[in-house]
Image (tube, rainbow, N blue to C red):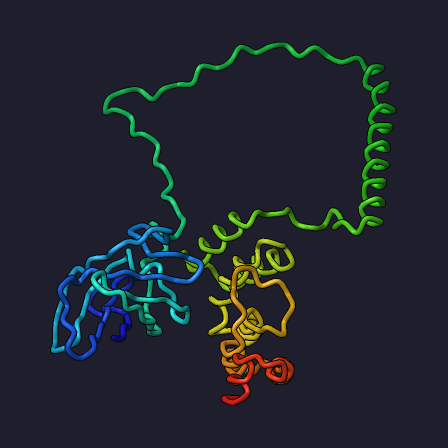
Amino acid sequence: MNASIRQDPAKGPGYGILRVTLDAGVSLVDPRFLVQATGLGFLGSDGWTDSEYRHEAEVIEQSGGAFTLRVGPSVVDCLVSGRTYFFRLAESAQRVQLIVEPGLLPSPRESRLSGDSPTPRPPEASKGAAPETPTPQALRPETPVPEAVRKSRLPLFIALAVLILCIAGAAWWFQRDAGAPGFGAGPEISPAQALQEARSLIQRHAPDEDLHAAIDRFSGQKGAEDAAFLLIEDLAPRDAAMRLRYAAYFDPAEHALSGSIQKDPEAARREYRRAQEAGASEAAKALERLKGWAEREAAKGDAQARFLLDNW
């Protein structure tokens, strides 16, 4: 079985044509389907969720062993060309990669997934009713402050400002000696918050510069590696440097934190080569380092490393 989705030219942005080709001898009984993405979970009726959700096509057409399912914004608005998704029929345990063809366009930015909300309109006045005039608050005469009192407060303000500067300087000094980040460091973020922010950026198709900024904030923060991975994976198909960083997550010779992503030398080799083809200058060195790791581990009897070398 294979599955792909492309733009529905008859209906425009937010609508797609999902084509599913079944294996020989397999018949379609239940046309409902599931869409899944690593790190995002399952595609639900209103975005990504942790629970399985079975989508129903608006129109179903059959031609031999191929089915055409026409779907709307609940599916199309959450898919991005170049990202890895998986497709499964509701009645089947077989899961295949869902190919998102270039040119699949989401609904306009005013859609429910864009994160925008309409500006509330003020309530209209009843016909014939006079506009409500706000009642002015009672004016209280301001008691003048004597000039002598004003002048006497100036030394107090200066003393407070000097005290605050001294405290700030002392705090900076102790943080520097302890190796703690200075005042310029960004606020810490929990793993759950980081994942939620990354998913939101991807779902609303945020500009690449916003994704890069979030990756910079997540990088080096323990617990935010998975969130950074989601954004790097989204950028990899159109950014050679991100393709290289994506490959490093799978590289067993790379000791940087990789969160919950399992090391996979075969995947690392494949992605490093894609990065090299995309123009990443450091990919060749990364491949040599990975090969050196495989040679050392194969000498110790590692079957996975031996398989990698035999198929290098």
